[in-house]
Each structure stands twice: as C-alpha cells, then as structure tokens.
Image 1: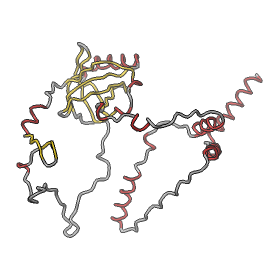
Image 2: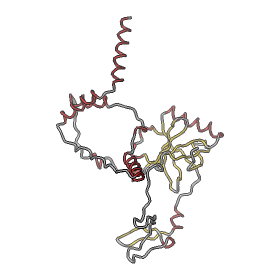
Image 3: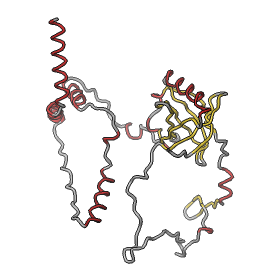
Image 4: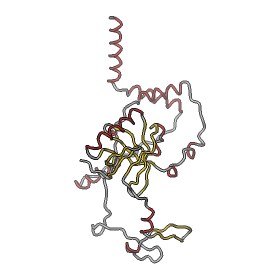
Length: 282
C-alpha cells in the first residue's frame, strides 16, 4: 500500500472532505553512490569551511545569509525564517475551474495523486471528480505543502485525481526569449507533404514503459561488471550527423519510414480492402 505524503482536506466552495496526497514520481530506484576515501575505503562526509579562516564551522554556528552586495550579507536567524512560513490549515482550496488545455505544460512541476481519505469521503470525492470530467476542466487550487504555499492543478485520472504543483510565473522563462527571433516561414507543397508522410509512418502510442533511462541502465551494468570482475565495454560514440539538403533528407526519411512500417499494419490495410471488396460484391 502506498504511503501518503500529506493528509488534509479538499475544499470546493462549501463542500470539504478528507483526502490524502501521494507522490506521483520518485527517484528512489535510480542508481545512487556514496563518496568514498580511495585510500581507506571509508565513506566521507561533507563539512562547511569558513572561506576566510578556512576553519570548520559547526552546525550550531551556521545561519542563512542573503548577499546585498559583494561580501556583505543580511543574516537571517532560524526563528525569523520560521515566523514568515505560512500557516497550514491542511486544506487544498479549489479557487477556479479552467479548461485543461489552457494550462501550458512549462508550468507543470511535481505530480501527485489525490485519493479520498477513508470511505466517508468517497461520495463527495466522486461527485467532484465526475463533475470535472464531464465539464472537461481542471481545478486550480492553493495549499501550504511542505512549508510553502503552492498552486496546484487538479484533473481527473481514473477513479482519482492527479495534482501537479505549478511553477510560479517568475520561474518560467518567456518563450519569446528563445522563439522571438525565429522567422515565420511558409511551408507548403511537396516539402509539407513529405513531412506529414514521415509523421504518419512514425506514429505510435504514448507508452512510458518503453522509455529507457540509458544512463541509469549503463550505471547498473557498470556496477554489475565490476562485481563480477568482467571487462567493462565502453559503448561506441554515435556517428556524426551530417547536414544534407533538406528536400533530399525529407525524401530519404519518407522512403525509410515506408520500408520500416510494421507488416501488421500493412496486412491490416490489405485485409480491410479485401473485406470492402467482399461487401461491395455482396
């Protein structure tokens, strides 16, 4: 059974009911390392050093500081920082419902699952979830999560809700910074037809199970090889990409995509055509 990372209430207008929040993603299964002293084989630990005196600074002497100019800091005591942390009433308050497609993906941050906390809340939870699904909307909510006031985007997912914390506007760079100087080109004719054909031949379904974390897999194989005393094979670097004529590249890509199309799809089309001929003959 998954362990809740947060418990509280979901409040929509005058309706409130208990819910639990579960982490939707985790990095716990990634390969992780410890830092080891090569000479002794012992683990090492980090230690803060005063930049000027080069003396170690014990934890009780460490405070946070905000640099106001080169070498000058405003010192903030732990109790001062604690005093400005917003109070949490353990409530996720839905402030508005918006079309989900209106939310740009660059604003999406961490994913969480929301489920009713106990059977008493099941009916209220289901009513809100199905109402959102029928109207095809997402909920914009606010809550104090893990010491920070966060904005959340809630949407139906199967029998539950998925919540994404949202990046603040000041955290998201404007697309104009990158796209502002791109020229507006009108693409048409054979070039656009070839591009559409390539996309059709490469069409597929979204299946996260097919995503490979090649770096993590390579680390796992490296560790395994070291444990077994095997020779470590270094992968060959990818071939250098050559810049070729755009139209030639599109034609070659379209040709390669047609050859690589799954046989099952081609057989399906032939079967459908044959069935159509039989229907016409009948």
